[in-house]
Image 1 (cartoon, rainbow over the protein chains, first blue to last red):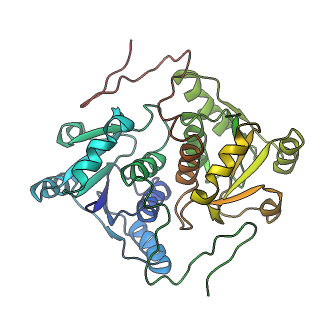
Image 2 (cartoon, each protein chain N blue to C red):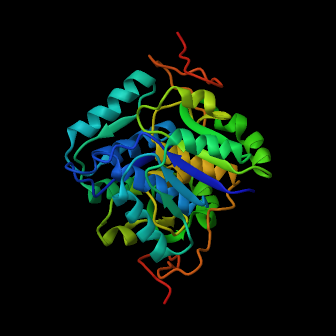
Amino acid sequence: MEDICILRIGHRPERDQRVTTHVGLTARALGAKGMFLASNDGGVKKSIEDVAKRWGGDFFVENNVSWRKCINNWKSDGGIVVHLTMYGLRLTDVEEKIREEGKTKKILVVVGAEKVPGDIYNLADYNVSVTTQPHSEISSLALTLDHIFEGKTMNLDFPDAEMKIVPCEHGKRFEN
Amino acid sequence: MEDICILRIGHRPERDQRVTTHVGLTARALGAKGMFLASNDGGVKKSIEDVAKRWGGDFFVENNVSWRKCINNWKSDGGIVVHLTMYGLRLTDVEEKIREEGKTKKILVVVGAEKVPGDIYNLADYNVSVTTQPHSEISSLALTLDHIFEGKTMNLDFPDAEMKIVPCEHGKRFEN
């Protein structure tokens, strides 16, 4: 599987910081390489990168990108664009095709907030709906990554971690 | 599979409304029956129930429950308690066992916010970690439900819906 990155659009610094942070951390935990943020919010970039630093790996956040340029560059480089939207085709109907394409092409997953520019629907190679019901861009992203990666990124090992959990039945354990 | 419900603990009305709403909507979209909210927040109850009314089904939200009573009642009724925590056993290591138990026992999935009472770890039948990395209670819940249900609740049909999406490649389509 080629690399997967996220493009977060529609982020409003005054109210979406927590949700966008969850989007970034979910992307990292499930094996995406980084997130482009189509908004100027250095705080979100910093808080995701702080977690990434402590917990390992090299997940990146690029702040203040133009979503249009980001998509166009991605496509010029031969990548495909998967836009998560309640209105798209069912994930379960397209995941195999996306996975197949992902073997040779990098994938940009576009995660919108409440309103997205209408152009996105046409610029995307795939408009994908997770359940066709309203819920959360965070859960949509998690399920999309888990399905595209076929569960293989559920228990990633992140290099150079300062913090690492040892799974246990009760309580909390860290690796020393 | 018996019923699955959610118990949301640690919700702070002043700052967790959006995340808790996403938790509730994710639970509904993926086939849980309802959510117990261990906090007094009629606004969250109303916003989830408003969505449920328009989009169909009979997902419930019970406001202002005592988390301890809720767990004790659930267990007295023969149900099992699955607590989602970064520190628990890997979802992939326990999902089969939980699914097996879920054939005859109802399941309460406990979804915490930043801090949870230490007792929960001992009251839970399963402490479950989704990836052992920090990300989001919303993605943890989504992945847990999808795994326990083996993907069978990805495209549920909700009865008596006022709104229903027709999946499409580009743009937005509703059923009339």
